[in-house]
Length: 258
Image (cartoon, rainbow, N blue to C red):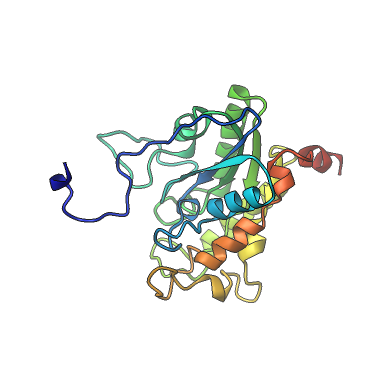
């Protein structure tokens, strides 16, 4: 009963998913990634993460769609190599280890927007750009093998340059981030389309997040220059091509033709 929970919490410890009946033509889009999909630094209980923004835009445009947030703070593409109850990791199992549970096993999934990689390049991850690219290729191939009709959109990773976080913000991480984004933008048709979150949030003068996207939304604090605030998530959500994610145009074919 409630006596077991004397203090308030912002975590949903006992909710795995909510499944419901929906019309057969409903599109189900999964935001797959780390804390920048989970919504760190957005407004507490404000529902203003980029998946929320996408959901509201789709509804306002008259599309029948559900957007699922499958972000885990600290998650990585390539690591950890070993994850178990005996060897836990704060960021959860790697993207490849959890993609079946968090994407492919969900009801009616039609598309995935995958934003991930910055934690692989942190001091805690320390993976190479080549390792992350190779693992992304493997995971995308596995998703297509399991669900051939699924649309997979690669999202460019936003900048962490100058972050106050001890694990982020250093020049080597930025070099790897740029290399990964170059691959995502020019993957030769591996993705069905690209969502350019980096372009939507980058300050070209500093190489970091735009200044207005830095202050933390809930506390009004200075922010960490790693996680966008409410305004930053709004810019990210607005950067997504609705026609692309709803399958109204074949972006992948057009990119291959070019």
